[in-house]
Amino acid sequence: MKTKIYDYLNKPYAVILIMLIAPVFGFIDRNFVFFFALGITFLILRGSKFDWARFGIGRKITGKTVLKSLIIALVLFIVFGLFIDPILET
Image (tube, rainbow, N blue to C red; front, side, top):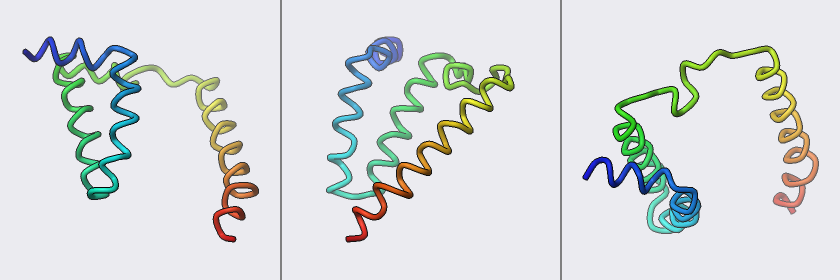
């Protein structure tokens, strides 16, 4: 059974379906969304025999990865700070 759940959760359509369903739970209770995502993550981790590399932990961090992460963070900060935040405040 554990393998069937893991195989299903690793399909792209299952990931998209979970991403669409999870915010709906936010209307019920905000904490439920967190624990729902935590449960799905645990099922994937358990199915992969606790292979943390599946989530990116344990991979080598290069300068290119750090630079790309900083650029993405800066772009998101600018977009949300200059465009999204003023719209939400009005």
